[in-house]
Amino acid sequence: MLYALLCCHDEAVVTSWTTEEDEAVLAKRHRVTGPLAAQGKLRASIRLMPTTAATTVRMGREPVVLDGPFAETKEALLGVYLVDCASLEEAIALAQQIGRDEKVVFEIRPVRHYRPQGNFKETAA
Amino acid sequence: MTDVAWIDPLLRAARPQAVGALLRYFRDLDRAEEAFQEACLRALKNWPINGPPRDATAWLILVGRNVALDDVRRRSKSAPLPEDAVLSDLGDAEADIAERLDNSHYRDDVLRLLFICCHPDLPATQQIALALRVVSGLSVKEIARAFLVSEAAMEQRITRAKSAVARAEVPFEAPGAVERAERLAAVAAMIYLVFNEGYSASGGTVHVRLPLCEEAIRLARLLLGLFPGEPEIIGLTALTLLQHARAPARLDADGDIILLEDQDRALWNRDMIAEGLALIEKALRHRRPGPYQVQAAIAGVHAHALRAEDTDWAEINQLYATLERLQPSPVVTLNRAVAVSKLRGPEAALAMIEPLAGPLAGYFHFFGVKGGLLMQLGRGDEARVAFNQAIALAHTPAEAAHIRLHLDRLIKASQSA
Image 1: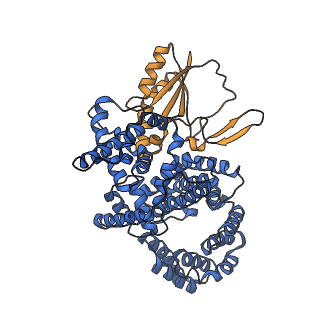
Image 2: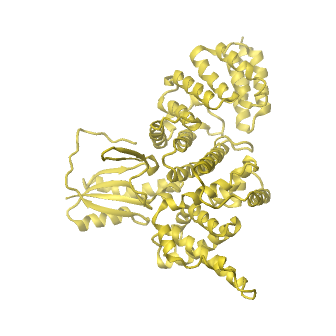
Image 3: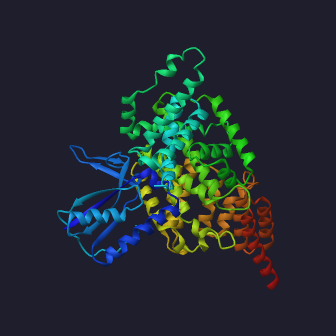
């Protein structure tokens, strides 16, 4: 079963990390996600730009385009891991490993469809 | 949990909102800062035992407020009963919850906090120092180090700035639309000052001060988070990101300046560039161009070019022409002349900067550019004069060293000729 680990963080905290602190968190996570990718358990990882880069389109009679995220919440969706797990228990365990020593929130959502289109290469941004 | 390192980023992140809200309660900057300080001390004691609260900012505001009010009560014990005005603020649990719910409630608090740092009576350096102290929460020692002055001098500078701000009596009511727009513009200018102070130091021995740039980016993002639909704030954030992206390539191992066209572009921070370009795209949709957006667009054109020779100088020339219309200044014209020199040659550029000699008589870059153009035209003697004038006006040793490099080349060229 595929699960999306929606990685939610207090954005004020994340954007106040220094470059070194940011890199340290990434390196720490990579120690977990690297082996997971090698085992084929990690299908994709996405890091989103800050919500200040977000645009919201709200469809209705007249579509409305707004700057900023859909919801102004303290914890914002800042990234997604797509993992292939045998059980929810395993997905929970992975989330706990990836987020170890951080004040982060993971929302685990079982994936209903996953249809990769085309053959995308890894991209830095 | 004995390690409290994780608390620090939480306190740092909560600071602008918390101090802003406490300032609204107490209407006194010193008292607001002290209350926040006290709340932080309690957090350091409390959080390792009980874990972090769900909403650290709300916790700090509540605790800071209660601690300060306790203090008021204690001091007034022997005095007559405190006036209602002091006590009526107590224990309004519902209001606290409401505040916790919506980020936008903090908007004017944070804006006010930023705004009091840019009082027009304060010289730029005091505005920057005050913002770094009050909003960013850097210690006086850290700020003194960034400005390369003694701690005592910086302490004095900040104290003086604070008393000027206290006299200014910034209104505490929620601002009207016009007032809010004015505050936003003043705050944006102040954040850009912070950035520039880091990007191109106005004195001392270090030419680039990265922490100030990073702090400015953080402040810009903070402001943009509060006002997501303001194209100039989007532009300002983009501008700081795109400029800062080049930081790893701007100086060599000896701390000497490497010009844009000679920089190793592989060192540029691609994440920051991508974010900056995404922001420009967002800003342009508003069709309300402004100086920050145009400057960001110029930085964006440079960022797009993977090699210096790929730079779209025609586009840059056009953008500078727009900037000249929006914000006429001899410095902007000087910058456009650089683009013109690439498009139409050094002669045309030299003719363009000729009339700037008066207004830019004390400007380092004017003589640097002039010397460079003269050198391209083979007018070595005149170039040497211009470069010597530039050196006399250099702010940092790196600026002077960079010009000296040109002079050395000129001397070598004249010897071999």
